[in-house]
Length: 168
Image (cartoon, rainbow, N blue to C red):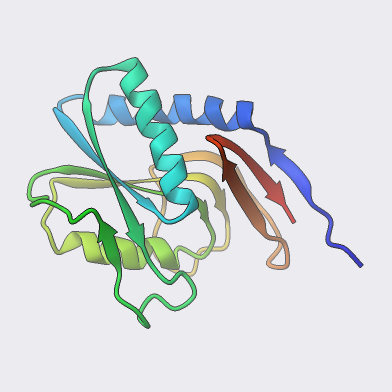
Protein backbone atom coordinates (compact mmCIF):
# COMPACT_ATOMS: atom_id res chain seq x y z
CA UNK A 1 0.00 0.00 0.00
CA UNK A 2 1.43 3.40 -0.99
CA UNK A 3 0.96 6.54 1.03
CA UNK A 4 -1.15 9.29 -0.48
CA UNK A 5 0.85 12.39 -1.44
CA UNK A 6 -1.15 15.59 -1.96
CA UNK A 7 0.55 18.71 -3.27
CA UNK A 8 -0.33 21.66 -1.03
CA UNK A 9 2.08 24.25 -2.47
CA UNK A 10 3.56 24.37 -5.95
CA UNK A 11 6.60 26.45 -6.90
CA UNK A 12 4.50 29.49 -7.86
CA UNK A 13 2.67 29.45 -4.50
CA UNK A 14 5.93 29.07 -2.57
CA UNK A 15 7.43 32.04 -4.40
CA UNK A 16 4.29 34.11 -3.71
CA UNK A 17 4.49 33.23 0.00
CA UNK A 18 8.19 34.17 0.00
CA UNK A 19 7.42 37.58 -1.55
CA UNK A 20 4.76 38.31 1.10
CA UNK A 21 7.04 37.16 3.90
CA UNK A 22 9.91 39.27 2.49
CA UNK A 23 7.74 42.38 2.71
CA UNK A 24 6.73 41.47 6.28
CA UNK A 25 10.37 41.02 7.30
CA UNK A 26 11.37 44.34 5.74
CA UNK A 27 8.46 46.08 7.43
CA UNK A 28 9.49 44.75 10.85
CA UNK A 29 13.20 45.40 10.31
CA UNK A 30 12.97 48.71 8.44
CA UNK A 31 15.70 50.36 10.55
CA UNK A 32 18.25 47.60 9.95
CA UNK A 33 21.18 48.02 7.56
CA UNK A 34 21.78 44.28 7.38
CA UNK A 35 19.94 41.08 8.22
CA UNK A 36 21.35 37.73 9.27
CA UNK A 37 19.43 34.80 7.79
CA UNK A 38 20.07 31.42 9.37
CA UNK A 39 18.43 28.57 7.48
CA UNK A 40 18.01 25.19 9.14
CA UNK A 41 19.49 22.53 6.86
CA UNK A 42 18.57 21.30 4.42
CA UNK A 43 15.22 22.74 3.28
CA UNK A 44 15.09 25.66 5.69
CA UNK A 45 18.35 26.81 4.16
CA UNK A 46 16.92 26.51 0.63
CA UNK A 47 13.87 28.53 1.71
CA UNK A 48 16.16 31.11 3.40
CA UNK A 49 17.97 31.58 0.08
CA UNK A 50 14.65 32.15 -1.67
CA UNK A 51 13.59 34.69 0.99
CA UNK A 52 16.94 36.50 0.80
CA UNK A 53 16.64 36.78 -2.98
CA UNK A 54 13.12 38.20 -2.68
CA UNK A 55 14.22 40.73 -0.07
CA UNK A 56 17.10 41.92 -2.21
CA UNK A 57 14.76 42.26 -5.22
CA UNK A 58 12.56 44.59 -3.14
CA UNK A 59 15.21 46.61 -1.31
CA UNK A 60 18.98 46.85 -1.39
CA UNK A 61 19.63 45.67 2.13
CA UNK A 62 22.58 43.43 2.96
CA UNK A 63 21.47 39.88 3.80
CA UNK A 64 24.13 37.60 5.23
CA UNK A 65 23.21 33.93 4.98
CA UNK A 66 24.22 31.00 7.17
CA UNK A 67 23.23 27.35 7.41
CA UNK A 68 22.42 25.72 10.75
CA UNK A 69 22.87 21.95 10.93
CA UNK A 70 21.00 20.19 13.73
CA UNK A 71 19.87 16.64 14.42
CA UNK A 72 16.14 17.35 14.29
CA UNK A 73 15.15 14.11 16.01
CA UNK A 74 17.73 14.33 18.81
CA UNK A 75 19.16 17.86 19.01
CA UNK A 76 21.16 17.17 22.19
CA UNK A 77 22.93 14.13 20.74
CA UNK A 78 25.26 16.11 18.48
CA UNK A 79 26.71 19.59 18.19
CA UNK A 80 24.68 22.28 16.45
CA UNK A 81 26.87 23.64 13.66
CA UNK A 82 26.48 26.94 11.83
CA UNK A 83 28.30 27.38 8.51
CA UNK A 84 30.14 29.54 7.77
CA UNK A 85 31.20 30.55 11.26
CA UNK A 86 29.01 33.30 12.64
CA UNK A 87 30.45 36.74 13.29
CA UNK A 88 29.61 38.58 16.49
CA UNK A 89 25.82 38.88 16.50
CA UNK A 90 25.57 41.32 19.38
CA UNK A 91 22.89 43.89 18.52
CA UNK A 92 22.16 42.23 15.13
CA UNK A 93 18.81 41.27 13.60
CA UNK A 94 18.53 37.53 12.98
CA UNK A 95 15.86 35.63 11.07
CA UNK A 96 15.85 31.89 11.79
CA UNK A 97 14.20 30.02 8.92
CA UNK A 98 12.90 26.47 8.44
CA UNK A 99 10.65 24.74 5.96
CA UNK A 100 8.16 23.06 8.32
CA UNK A 101 7.35 23.69 11.96
CA UNK A 102 5.96 20.68 13.78
CA UNK A 103 6.48 20.49 17.53
CA UNK A 104 8.74 23.52 17.84
CA UNK A 105 11.65 21.41 19.09
CA UNK A 106 14.07 22.19 16.26
CA UNK A 107 13.40 25.92 16.49
CA UNK A 108 13.67 25.81 20.28
CA UNK A 109 17.17 24.30 20.26
CA UNK A 110 18.32 26.45 17.34
CA UNK A 111 17.09 29.58 19.15
CA UNK A 112 18.85 28.49 22.35
CA UNK A 113 22.14 28.38 20.45
CA UNK A 114 21.59 31.83 18.91
CA UNK A 115 20.64 33.46 22.21
CA UNK A 116 24.21 32.99 23.47
CA UNK A 117 25.37 35.79 21.15
CA UNK A 118 23.05 38.49 22.58
CA UNK A 119 21.38 39.64 19.34
CA UNK A 120 19.18 42.73 19.08
CA UNK A 121 16.26 40.56 17.91
CA UNK A 122 15.50 37.12 16.57
CA UNK A 123 12.54 36.55 14.28
CA UNK A 124 11.42 33.16 13.01
CA UNK A 125 10.05 32.21 9.60
CA UNK A 126 8.41 28.98 8.41
CA UNK A 127 7.10 28.04 5.01
CA UNK A 128 4.57 25.63 6.57
CA UNK A 129 3.48 25.68 10.20
CA UNK A 130 1.60 22.79 11.75
CA UNK A 131 -0.45 23.14 14.91
CA UNK A 132 1.25 20.47 17.08
CA UNK A 133 3.45 22.59 19.35
CA UNK A 134 5.11 20.92 22.33
CA UNK A 135 7.70 23.66 22.81
CA UNK A 136 6.95 27.36 23.46
CA UNK A 137 7.93 28.59 20.01
CA UNK A 138 5.70 30.53 17.65
CA UNK A 139 6.73 31.95 14.29
CA UNK A 140 6.74 35.58 13.28
CA UNK A 141 6.37 34.86 9.57
CA UNK A 142 4.42 31.91 8.20
CA UNK A 143 3.76 30.98 4.59
CA UNK A 144 0.82 28.71 5.35
CA UNK A 145 -0.56 27.30 8.60
CA UNK A 146 -2.18 23.86 8.54
CA UNK A 147 -4.12 21.87 11.07
CA UNK A 148 -3.12 18.27 10.43
CA UNK A 149 -3.43 15.02 12.30
CA UNK A 150 -0.40 13.63 14.12
CA UNK A 151 -0.29 10.81 11.55
CA UNK A 152 0.01 13.21 8.61
CA UNK A 153 3.35 14.64 7.54
CA UNK A 154 4.45 17.62 5.49
CA UNK A 155 7.33 17.21 3.08
CA UNK A 156 8.96 20.16 1.33
CA UNK A 157 11.23 19.53 -1.62
CA UNK A 158 13.57 22.00 -3.29
CA UNK A 159 15.30 21.04 -6.52
CA UNK A 160 17.04 23.41 -8.93
CA UNK A 161 15.63 26.43 -7.05
CA UNK A 162 12.07 25.15 -7.48
CA UNK A 163 10.02 24.01 -4.53
CA UNK A 164 6.92 21.99 -3.73
CA UNK A 165 5.20 21.04 -0.49
CA UNK A 166 3.21 17.87 0.06
CA UNK A 167 0.82 16.53 2.66
CA UNK A 168 1.44 12.83 3.22
